[in-house]
Image 1 (cartoon, rainbow, N blue to C red):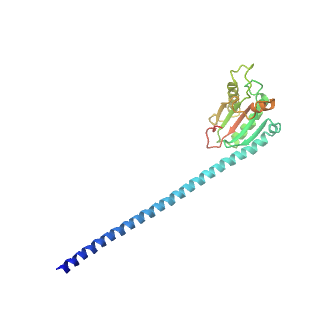
Image 2: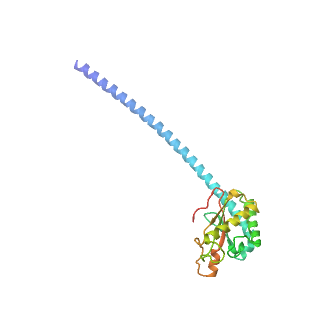
Image 3: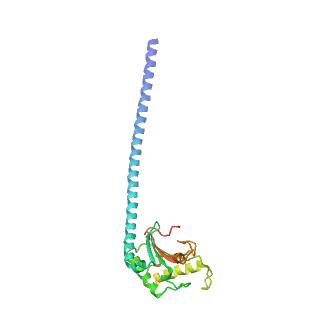
Length: 223
């Protein structure tokens, strides 16, 4: 009787162990399937991410190519101003910056664009409309740190803002640049490029900057 009972118990143990083993094996298989699915998903996400990064890089290359082409065109269009050291072009992280000395466009203390300065603006506008039609453009006015005495402006803020707006309105009204592309800012004397310690340095600070932004950027980044 003991032998039969022992045999029965062994059979129960083996059967239970076998079921447990089968369950563990099935669970292992299920986990392996889950792992395979997870690895496949990770691989797919990596491919999608790589494609997205590639697209971003290609877009940035296209934008840079557009700005580089515009820079070459402007170098030719503004060669007289550049040669006279009254304008310069710089490719910066903000975009392509065209810097004019204020005297190119304005008489001292004035915000009305001079007749001989209008031609410079028109040449810039031709490039804006032809070569970078999808890029936004910011016009920035700057002054030296000399306080207003005779021209009637309250401060250099007003003068620099009025000059930026004067260039903006000329681009819209006379050069047919879309107004939705344009913005204007006046910075007064607070973003100088040289110390205001000599006439030459103060002249450098009295300037108007036209910033051509990469086509996907809608605002000028703060300096």
